[in-house]
Image (cartoon, rainbow, N blue to C red; front, side, top):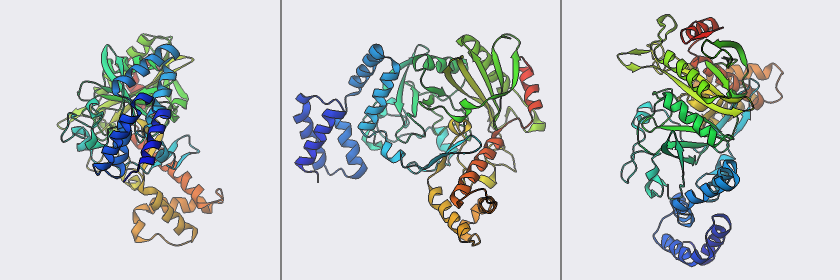
Length: 454
């Protein structure tokens, strides 16, 4: 049980880091004592303690708005992110321990040891519904203070997108620096339409130091919560944003707008303009053309008895060129050969990544399951010892053979370095799997239907 010295230390911490007022110190100390005597333990105890010591949601909202007005949106998000780290909602100490490295082919790979592997598209479609409490799903704003899901210390801030109320919060197990989500205050299903594109640009106008994007709103290629409209973004430039245009295309309506096909393993088109309406118009035309496009010879079916299969993942940043919107074409069609998805990671790569290839991976930041840290270490040991792959790790046959060949080539000093190269190669091939057009000439033919010329 917590003692009085520990309570005193927590109160002092809250005064220094959580803006607890001196006048409220004794009351909060008594509340912490009550929490301790209630028998709450472990992670629940930390959640309860820091939830009690944090500012009220209304106070967080006001503080954020005041900083935004006085110092700008960058200062406001800096304050909020640091606050969420200090009140232990963002598990930065855990996140900093996740293995992370950049690959020679321009991708970034992380192994997220804190978050369980997600393999259930049906759960995503239901939106990870919540039993009990006011919240309909795990990202509803009603989760603030919801102890059943360890959300007592969750704090969000109000924003307006497209004249509608939304809110912004940081992810507790963020995939990248200042990873957050913008969530519609209304619990409605995810969708991508013109309003979505307008909202994304609204967000970037408010927070030009962040990127923001939306998952394709379909099972197997979308996010883990499809039942509630939301976007993902944050303070990191992802690999896709750094990709170059390999083939310029000209829009017939806006011939002076810069647009092109990206040099990228997936299928992505970039639009650049200093005028927001031009970017939105062009991106929406691509979206409309793609959601209605079928090419059975290429395995592309817009809609069948199982529903709609084509969608886009738009993502936008602000740069010296103005708005840069990347539109990633996605399809969740399945086949007898590929029951998990034709344009999904193919079975030979499932030992590494079977989860949905969502917005973040589609932009080149791969979040691999935590189990891999131990599993791949064992495979590395077998290669170092020049031993054959054991039955226990038979699922890693491809990884074993290719890593072994890389190490024996003499290009890598250690097996671990060869393994990192192999992971980069596999993730690149997974993105190639997701490409709906394998040949540029096929993509150009599609873009012609959307009003473009090469």
